[in-house]
Amino acid sequence: MMKKLSFFASCDDGEALAFVEREDKKIRRFSLGAESFKDKKMLRITAPQFETSAGDNGYYLLPGDEKASGTALVRFAARSMNEKIRIDNPSLSIFAVANAEEVYVVMIENTYLYVLESEYVDGKYKICVEILTARQPVYDDIVFKVITLPASADYNDVARAVRNYRLEMGEIRPLRDKCAERESLEYARKYPLIRIRMGWKPVPPQILHQTEENEPPMYVACTFADVRFLADKMKEQGVEGAELSLVGWNAKGHDGRWPDLFPVEEMLGGESELIKTIEHVKSLGYKISCHTNHADHYEIAKTFNLDDLARNADGSVRSHGNWGGGTSYAACPVTQLRYAERDVKELVRLGFSGLHYVDCLSICRPDTCFDKNHRVTLSGAIEILRKIMNLYTEKFGGFSSEGMRDFSVGELDFSLYNCFRSTRLSFLPKDYEMVDAVIPMMELIYHGIVLYNVSSATVNAIIKGDEAKSTLALLGGKSALYINSKFLSAKKNVFSGISNNWMGEEDITSESREALTEAARLIYDSAKEYEALCDRQLVFIKSYKTLDGGICVTRYEDGVEIVANFGKETAAYRGKEILPSKYVRIEA
Image 1 (cartoon, rainbow, N blue to C red):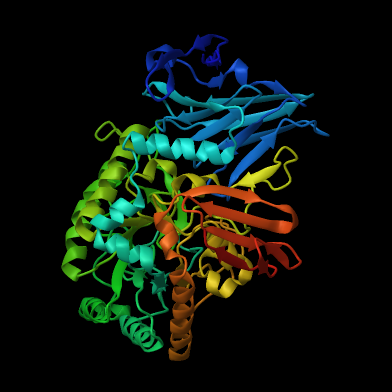
Image 2 (cartoon, rainbow, N blue to C red; image 1 turned 90 degrees about the horizontal axis):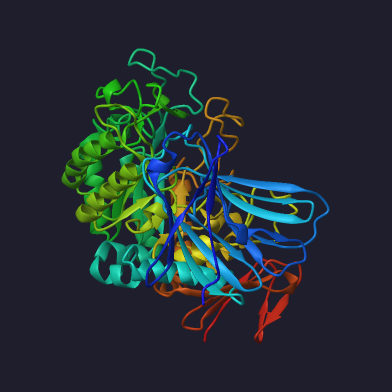
């Protein structure tokens, strides 16, 4: 018999609202009708069964945001100080609570913004979901879906339960099945991605409101002829397969004049040279795709229109920060879809192939819009963004973007990085006493569903040392290199709030033919290392565990293990010697 579980929403005016439970074959479903809280400014949702005391058996699992490379495991231990963790807009819409009797896996319907909060105060642990309806009105019912597992279930069981539920509901599909259907995706599974940033204007921008008269000059880093040279050198090196993804090929380079793509940037060679390059790269047996952006609009664009922008509830427009084109204004999702439908026809005409990449779409919270002419709620925005992903998949055989927020995983094929993080596994901030371990829950759930590079720290892993390469292998990542990843022109970007080059200060460049030749060698080395691991993309992860001495083990459902040694001493595991910062593959 299932244990009693009840959710309540405490409102800003003191009223308490009870959720209604409805059971089905797979889960327990708890909902709070939107009509019941339409005039409330804040809801704090709790379940009495989730409160516990220091010394009790069990744990919390608290997912991080896009800056945390894992999920926090909080055991119910006695602490030396009171502490509170608040995660605004978690990347994974789940949390888990384990006690001596059961483990509750709570899946939150992703149709409203919320903060997940956990606190330890005077020996007591609590967890709640806070929804600030004053900040972002909620139009849909609030729904929590709860999977109940035995008390013995650990985080690996939680991950498996979420994955299996979403598979059974048809929300996600195995990568194995998708690769069998789509040649572009199967190619992407087997070979590394090579992104090439070709041109850009200064970032941070000194001119926020750009016109053709005051527009800063674009820096040329890599011409279309240089791309052909690189592809030839890759062939000479013996690179069997790779997908080249062109970034900043469009008018005035990366983030130059969105939503304008055209004319193809003349300083790079113009459209005729681009088409020549696409045909040449494909003739060598490689894929060649490109990078576009629908969310950011700049005033300098010929197509810039105030009516296209997302509006806040007070009618003001929203900014995504300041980049190469100046102030970046958020486009309404309706606008984003319209421009995607426009752009895809031209991209097909140019001859691009491989997984098309749209910036920001899967790592950022979707934009909502309160313009009366094109009002879009969060659930409506998610639906539109999924349409954009499917549009590109239909035309190019696959879709990629910047991250893997879980609303996107049903349509996303590749995530450039699952988080912006420079360390192997960490939670923000790192010094929370409450965090007893950091678990790669996103990878445990979605490996075998989506291709991904683990984090911004493992892009260009081939030049970042053994720890980066071991992290990528251990967590099931796909090899991704980025030529000219480093492009910020100031240590502190006071305009955009960016403090560093988030893919690292190490870089692969295109500054000379010698540099491009070296890039081809690095691509070969990366491709050979990934060749021995790419079969893992088709197998679900069964478990991840950490052992004494810095040993970490990822075990796949077919019994194969990837074992990494992050300790300072050489270690042994199942008869294999593993040097510090290295990894080994052990067959079943």
